[in-house]
Length: 131
Image: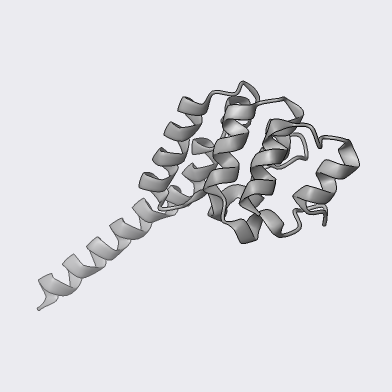
């Protein structure tokens, strides 16, 4: 009986030690996502999103609001850098409801697009089709 208790405690302690760093590693996994979006590398972005989903069981909607690139969201960054391929992928992977909701600065994507004069950006058409 004592062996079972000791073994259970050892397993529990080991699992806690291994589970702790997993949440810290999400930051390193998403570290270069802004660069990927800015350079319009759709294949690399798709790999990054798939890796985060398989390693941490997180979809884009789960970490989208926590990632900023120079104060802008990923879709805004794609629009400012004319990264049509990655911007389109991001818009298609986001739930429609999240595309309509305000971002960190309190503005929706449509309001921000109108404010910055990006109505002619190809990503704007994709956003309008999704909403």
